[in-house]
Amino acid sequence: MRHLLSTQDLSREAAIALLDVAEDMSDVGEREVKKIPALRGKTVVNLFFEDSTRTRISFEAAAKRLSADVINFSAKGSSVSKGESLKDTAQTLAAIGADAVVIRHGSSGAPRVLADSGWIDAGIVNAGDGTHEHPTQALLDAFTIRRRLHGAASRGRDLDGVTITIVGDILHSRVARSNAWLLTTLGAQVHVVAPATLLPLGIESWPVSVGYDLDAAVASGPDVVMMLRIQSERMHAAFFPTAREYSRQWGFDDERLARLPAASLVMHPGPMNRGLEISAGAADSPQSTVLEQVSNGVSIRMAVLYLLLSGERLTSGSPQAGEVTR
Amino acid sequence: MTARIVLHQADITRALTRISHEILESNRGSNDLVLLGIPTRGVALANRIGAILGSIDGVDASTITVGALDVTMYRDDLSRNPTRAPSPTAIPAGGIDGKTVVLVDDVLYSGRTIRAALDAINDLGRPRAVRLATLVDRGHRELPIRADFVGKNLPTSTSERINVRIQEIDGIDEVTIEGSTPA
Image (tube, rainbow over all chains, first blue to last red; front, side, top):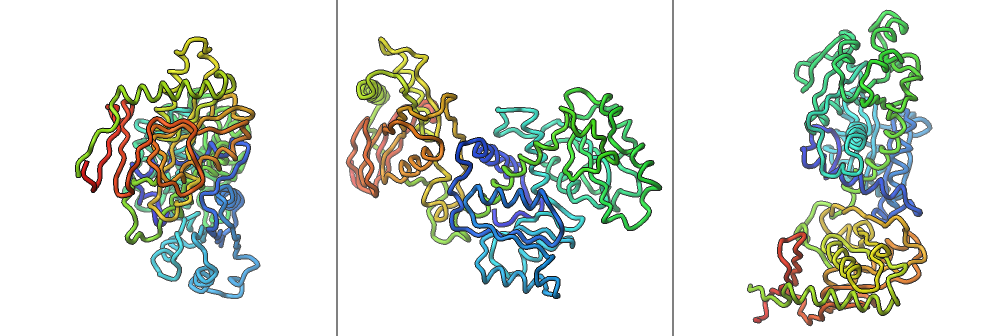
């Protein structure tokens, strides 16, 4: 794997293999010494142009568990606020000798620009670009679902036949986009529920079915309900009349939780607006996977960084794959 | 390129049986013994040695613990080869602290895999002792490492290739040697 920019680039086999590597990485987190030397001497730069708590900390923890050196960069307090361009920032990082760049940017497609530009030779990981994609979040969601369904026997399994309902702000959600592609690739059936104003143009081209009524979706008994955050920082138009009305129609409250089958999962990528899109009762119920998603995020990001950074870069005259030196 | 069979099924079984007895002898019984196979074929061999140990008179089969130890993340050639997918590590419930760990692998060659395994063990706990059992020792060590229990010493040239096939994985038990030099 050269870069991880979009879940659309992942084949079914590649996605399952990545989830399997993450299984091995999660074992590392349970050991006495939570560190392996796989990426010793590599430098990972966290390049964050947008605010983030869990994604940045998660990538930092993942890189450190693999013994890589981490440089954190946030646009606030950097030369970006003096007007430095993405190109100059990238070339600076290349000069420092970054082996991988984890980028979060407010503009959709910024990671792709970085990967295709030739400004920097490092592996690029998309950690959320505008309203486009957030592939590691989708991977950790798939990992969490697979673990809850199959437990210790998860290795090598796909998500065939699993029904997943994604609810909320589909229009602005990069989590929804990445999940729609990845979960479908893995064999799941994805249904999205949202107010019509929060559905993007061209949703017909997504591999999902669309509904507007959360109660009908809950009544159909999905295996997973994934709530999305109402992104107040992107709410620049009147998408719904009031927060209270949204909460009543599309919020996942205690009463809807009671109507969901007992084995179904309630997921949320965080950070949660408790009382708006998800009630405290639902967020803290045993069916909720919110905290598992966070700890699984570290395992997934370890797997991504490992697959990106171990192995020879742009192989030339290297031994055949699979040949083992004993 | 012709492959010559150097160990047949019966030879492999005899070698594993002898290794099992030697392990019992050096450990004075099966107490506090942990067998760790190195994926993939080492795991199958460790399970076989575990089963043989359990069938030997006077050995309590419940004291024998077998696990798997993946060393991929500890290899020194990670950035020289194409990306390698790790295999699962399974450490027995009792851990390895204070135990005698016997590493089991199919072929001992450069010794680099074993060096990686020693590093991996270091991160998992502090065993009382670490021993090494290998089905085939083909020489050409690049590190000061030797095996305590060897199924067969096979002097080879580096241009030759040793193939270990195990029933559980390859459907047949045999060790073959192939390479440029005529048989």
